[in-house]
Length: 186
Image 1: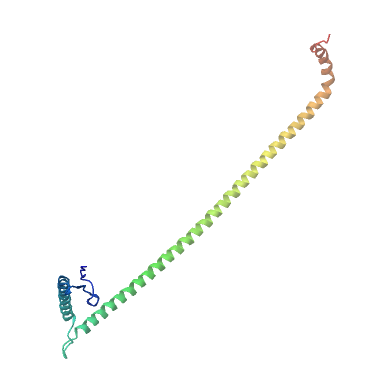
Image 2 (image 1 turned 180 degrees about the vertical axis):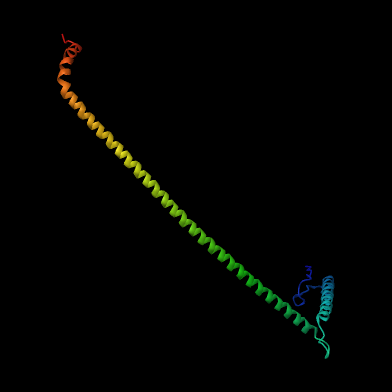
């Protein structure tokens, strides 16, 4: 019934098994060695912490000596003031650049609008010219068509006159030929 005590257990949780004549000697010795090691580690950590604390502590300035922290504060204030000034200058320059870009963009938009309007006017003029030419060509085609119709009408009148005048003579002249051309049914 042997139990070993872990080094990580807090001292209040340590229990030793009871053996025939008290506690197990080997287990107690083991626990004591572990406890001594922990004490040594804590002692070393305490000394290191004390040295760090001693190094971190800054003595208060004596009367008549310049306050280094105050000088540091003034330097920081100057650095901050310079940074603020530079930031303001950068903002001003950015505003100027932004205004210039906006003005250039507005000018480009105005030029583009003027160009668009001019192109639109030119396109309207060209479209009107095309329409006018198309209307002129359509009128010329209509006139030519009408002239053809008029000629055909005159030709039809002439043909009718010729038919009336020569129609009876040509019919009688064509009749024997027409009779020859017809096949007999017998």
